[in-house]
Length: 453
Image (tube, rainbow, N blue to C red; front, side):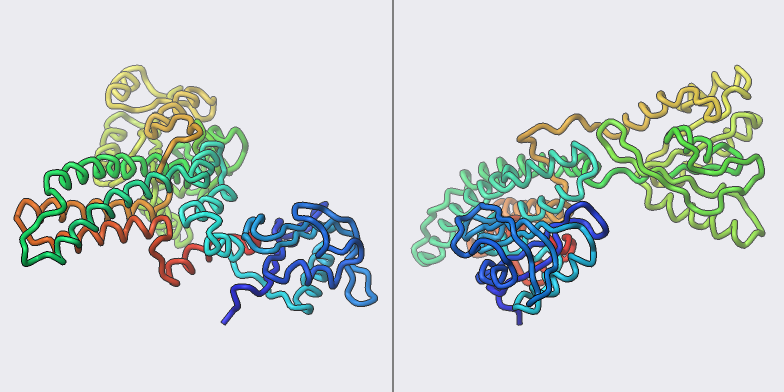
């Protein structure tokens, strides 16, 4: 079993060749350990938050010139003694420095272990710790701001306030149980109902914010589908403004999923150009068609492309087949330059967005239509949004437990059953911030972090 005090080491910057690399070391004896391989000032004698020039050695072997940053407990990210070694970004140098640190007593860190130690040592709660990873992986400014708001503790403070309110009433009900034979009521049921209604009102606002928060954090997987030669690949190229996909008049050119990402209105969209939907005896093409169906099932948005050069009755018949798809759909009429005026008028009345992908006509109109499906404004400092699926599930379970409390009071059940449901609500809220944890929960959360974070 690993000791919670032993020094751990990992590369904190990205793998590969770079100008500099930062190697992170944390643990009770980390400064002493660094001093063993460092030639320069006595690191142990230096004050916290100072940087020192010197060289790293493995015995008589000079590995590199470095800058060593010293952070003394409790004023560090992990609240332990910590050292960060800034060296040249050669993978060989990084490997040699980590190797000599391990040889002198450090252990290779596991994913997220630095942040896990920060959580265990009280640097921040579990929701804030998860926000650290969200900041690292943020791909848009909205995602960054949402994660930063969570890391600063706004969400955690709200959850803690809800728990404190419930704990007060739970303690009164528990007290009633101690005086069960005397038929006393310390927790007035009307006051408890009023409190639960207030808590649920706020829970509902948090739960409903998840749709927006999830879009901000994870982006929108968007599938471009339709029959062969409808112009799906041309549309992908027009949206991205680059020649990403091969365009050909030969049906079945696209046989696998081609995808790329772009930012629209502060949201990350992953557009996926797919194989044309048709019956085919070509084995390779049929695999591509099957993959198209699979991607449609998992999509958050479907851009279904119609070929407007076809007869109107064929277009309308194809439109009728979309009703069975359980996914938000934008009907895109492509090749409007080849359609007759009568068809254009009828299709516009049936909520078709008409474009010419080859001439890049109405592409901005289509982008606006895409964004209209996701009402996401700018995330501002202090905004509280639920972006984490684990938090969303816990909030729903909390709300369900409070529903049971209300139902129990209406049916006149005894205080011990009310207390049980209130304790369940407290448990689910406590799991969000880490006041209630299990080893499996922590292992699952921190395993998704970078090794050096």
